[in-house]
Image 1 (cartoon, one colour):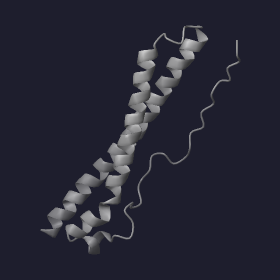
Image 2 (image 1 turned 90 degrees about the vertical axis):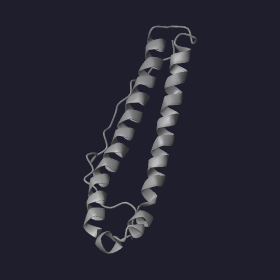
Image 3 (image 1 turned 180 degrees about the vertical axis):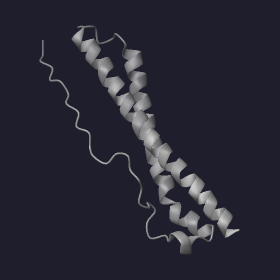
Image 4 (image 1 turned 90 degrees about the horizontal axis):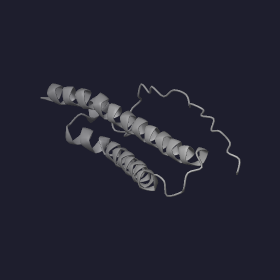
Length: 119
């Protein structure tokens, strides 16, 4: 029975980590799109009302992705409790809710944003 439980943890763990990384990537892509929408409006000297609804929806999407990321973080904090309830604390321990990961984001990516002069 413990072997089945351990197998379940080994199945869920990479899926959980993948979901966290996907959420971060989606939020980053949405933020880039949001910035591009604003930049396109400025660069083309369009009215502030042009694309306002779309820009507003993108902003709401970014907020929702941040909320989803926070919920994932909160879910991650429950790891020790779940491990204990499954009787696996001897195999995994519970000193930290965040076990070491193979993080694909090993270094920060520096993004240079263009400077816009007031016209």
